[in-house]
Amino acid sequence: MEFVWSVVTFIGQAIEVIFGYVEHHHWIFAFLAGGYVFYLHDRSVHARFDALDRRIDEIRKRLAIEY
Image (tube, rainbow, N blue to C red; front, side):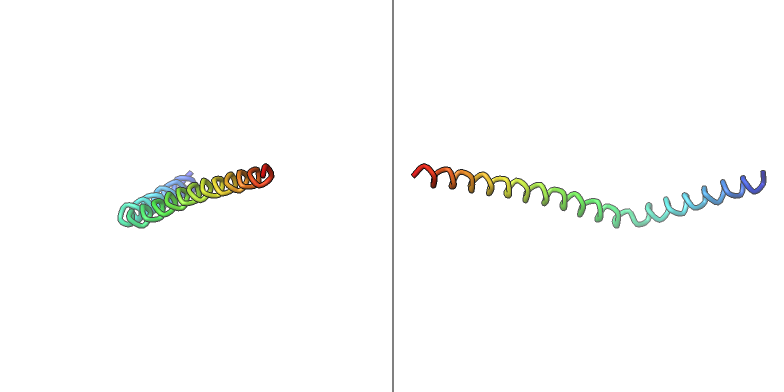
């Protein structure tokens, strides 16, 4: 039982160290999260422009066929 308790306390102390690191270095994680949000937004904007380009190409093809 003492071994189990020592494992539990070790895991608790490890979690406490991780939380302490995050608390003191939260700006790093905020920077990474902000960069990821910007990356997702950039991907969605590029996807919209690509869809618009495809639509314009389709309209040009239709107009070329009609004339």
